[in-house]
Length: 96
Ligand code: HEC
Image (cartoon, rainbow, N blue to C red; front, side):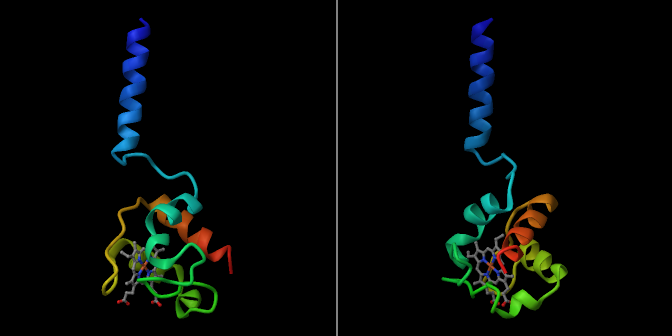
């Protein structure tokens, strides 16, 4: 019986490792999928600044959703589900 639990655990762990987990918070999404290009403080690196002083701060959520899910110029589309996209936008805008 114990073996089955162990296998189940391994299976769940395996899923996490290959990136099938859903992010639970906007901070997690941002750190995993955005901060490499936009920096942890939103001031930008490879990508432009998206902090409160940037042009994107004044853009509606629809612009953000479009940019994240479809990509824009040299920014590739980021694979996230609808909930994760909402969470990450909320997280960024809550810092403004
Ligand atoms: C591989 C690097 C990379 C990643 C990862 C990335 N971006 Fe970008 N992002 C860019 C680049 C480069 C641009 C500029 C695109 C252009 O206009 O040519 C950009 C543009 C943007 C813009 C528009 C800025 C403006 O002034 O119009 C927003 C908003 C944005 N990114 C948000 C995000 C969010 C949120 C994430 C995470 C879900 C993310 N990006 C992930 C590189 C990245």
